[in-house]
Structure formats: structure tokens, C-alpha cells
Image (cartoon, rainbow, N blue to C red; front, side, top):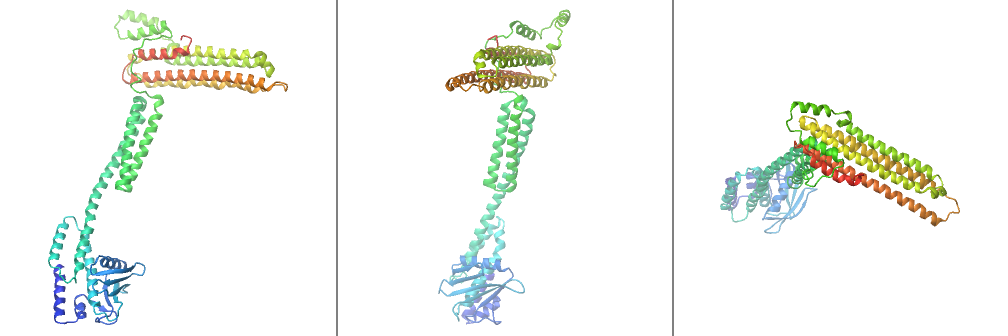
Length: 537
């Protein structure tokens, strides 16, 4: 192509030197014709046909003229596809029109604004030549990076043979355009590799999120909140990083979808992990044995049970073993199910006594303001009954809880295949979610509500018209404060007991998970914490 261009220049110079018509030369080499006749005329419009569409030819011509050093574009109308430009040497104005050829392709017409312009054919030759070279160099813009070296050598060679008269000055610009277009292809290759890395990151985050979901669903109840926090947050962090790369750096829809799904699964894994925690274990720090001295709820029973647990590994003679088994044959009350049933029975008895006392108090107070003033001490009797029955129940609860886990310790130590997970869950359901929840419903939402409704909203609200307002207000306020304080004390004590029971349950599960069957330290710590709420404080 370079040789052909040089040949055109040399031949053009030769024609000019022999005073041959430019029009004849352009018709021979480029195929330009006048719009009205077969041969061009000086100063007449010049037309050239291209096989490309009107839009493609227009954009190429506009880009060529804008990048040219020989011409200056004054106006480019993208709607009507018309370009106005001027010759940089003499300022002559020209108009370029683009029309669709009926036989296909595009007719490009260059028309001088000054009639009889003798430079029109030469200007048309230069413009049409630049457009043609732009189309010819377009495939080079898609060359591989290895072709860039050859393109650079071509530019160097072209620069050596570039004529000094500026007739083909735009040829260098076309080569420069190639270099500018070729550089993004190298970046595109790097971008492709980066997008591949982004896809790997998104897939890795998704796989980690799925693994976290499976692990937290199956193991959170045994491993505890540490596993939930660590694995869940790592999965969520990796998913967030993958989503950041997908949205900010690589910007691909596939990476964005995969990363978004990974984030959603990570969040779901955290939620399901914590949902499983109420029956799971606490942290290992909570499960460490305490060196504090024990405070026994029932010293004789606790010490005998602990001694039996400590001596369970000793080898005894067959006769003494048979004698001990005969004397300590377990009954239904000593079984794990029987112990849970006993705790529930104790709760029902305490709640029943408190409810009976509340109904008795309501009858004693009566249904009027005057009767309340006469029998208001009966309300204090109700409060005393609540306190005494609550402490009694908590004391029995503590003793039976210790008994339950001591029995479980012996059974699991004797049979390591025992389903301790189900047995500890039975205690949780029957005591923590069972008896203690029922005690709240029966007393806090039951007896206390009855006292409030029948006395505060009933008797105290039924007063005669001659009662002084300030005196009545003082009476009702005192009753309300006393009732509120008693309810608050009951709630705090119940909340503390529930916490103590849950911590013991969690610590025992932690020990069992580590194949440790001696719960002595955990039981002693439980007895010490629950003692202030029992009659054995």
C-alpha cells in the first residue's frame, strides 16, 4: 500500500510537470467523476462512490478531516450528513455531501463554495484518498499485540518517504490513528484477564458461603457462637469483597450475580447459625471450670452423688457391686424423665398456691373502696405467699437440676454412645422452655394481673362521691407502687434463675461435646448462683 501511495504521488508530480490535466489523472487513478459528466471539470463538484453505508462513510470522513493538518472543519451536521471544511493553506471553503447510491454504497460529493475553484480536484483527491486509507487501515486497528511492532516499522518507513509538499500529510495522521486504536486492544486483553480473575473471586466467595451455610446449620448447636461469628463473618467479608470487585473494578453482570448470591447466602448462614444457638453451646471461656469452693443446695444428697460419680471408675468386687445395685435400684422418680416431671409438678404446685391466695385476697378485700381500706393488709399476705412459694420452688428446681445432670453424667460415662444431645434437649424443653415459662405465665401474667384488675381497677375505683380526691389518690398510688415493686422483684428473680439454668445447660453440653463427663465444677457454680433466690441462701 505504501508503494502504491508513493507511486500515486510520483505520477501526480510527473503529470503536473508535463502539464497533464489533474482531472484526467484523478479519473485514471481514483475513479472520481463529475456529478454531471463523465470527466471532471475544474471548479466543478467531484463525486466518489464507496461501498460502505452513509453513516460509516460520514463518520470516517468527519474523523479524517478533524485529524487532518491540511484541512479545518468548520461545521459537521450529524443529522443531515453534511460537512463544511476549509483548506488550511488558502482558506478556500468546501462542502461534503453524503448520499445513498441506488445501486448500493454511498456517493460522496465535494463541492467548492466558490465557483470555478481550480484546487477542487486536488482537494477532493486528498480527501477521498484519506477516506480510502482510513477504511483500508481499519482492519489494522484489530491487529494482535504482536502486529504492533510491524505497524511501528511501517510508520517509520512511511515517514522516510513522506513528501515535503504536504499533499499526503494526512497519511501520517492515519498511521497515528492506528496506534491510538491499537493501544486499547492491549488494555482489553488485560481487562479480559482481570475479568477472569473477578469471576474466580466470585465463584470462590459463593463456594465459601455455601460451605458456611451447611456447617452452621449442622454444627452451630454443638460448636457454639464462636464458630458462627468466625465462619459467618469470614464468609460475609469474602462475599462483600467479591461484590465490590464485581461492581467497581470488573463490572460484569455474571460476577455481580454470583457475588450477590454469595452475600445473600452468607447472611442466611449467620441468621440460621444464631437461630440454632438457643440450644447450642456457649463460648469455651464460659465452659472452663471454676476454682471457687462449692455451696451445696442439699449437702447430703449432692455429696453422695458426687462421690458416686467420682468412684464410678473404680474396680469393685462383683459381690459389692451387686449389693450396691440392689440397694440403689433407680425408680421412676430417679430417671431423667422422672426428674423433669418432678420439676414441672413443683411449678404447678407453687403456681396453684399463689393463684389460690390471690383469689382469697380478692374476696377479703371486697369490691368497694371502703372494704379495701378495712382489709388492705390481706394484699400484703398475698405478696408474702408469692415470695415464699417462689423461693420454695426455686430451691426444689435447683436440687432436681443438679440431680438430673449428675444422673446424666453417670449414664453417659457408662455408655459413650448415649444420645446426650437429645437428653440435654429434653431438659431444655421441659424446664427452661417448659416449667419456667409456665411459672411466668401463671404468676406474673396470672395472679398479679388478677390482683390489679379486681382491686386497682375494681374496688379502688368504686368509691363514694364524698371521698376526698387527694386521700383517694394517695391510697391508689400506694397500692399501685407496692404491686409494681412486687411484680418487678418477681420478674428479676425469675430472669436470674432462667439465666443460671441456661448457662448450666450450655456448659454441660460443651463438656459432653469434648467427651468430658464430670460436671462437678459446673454444678457447684450453678448452686452458688441460684442460692440467693432460694430458702437456702
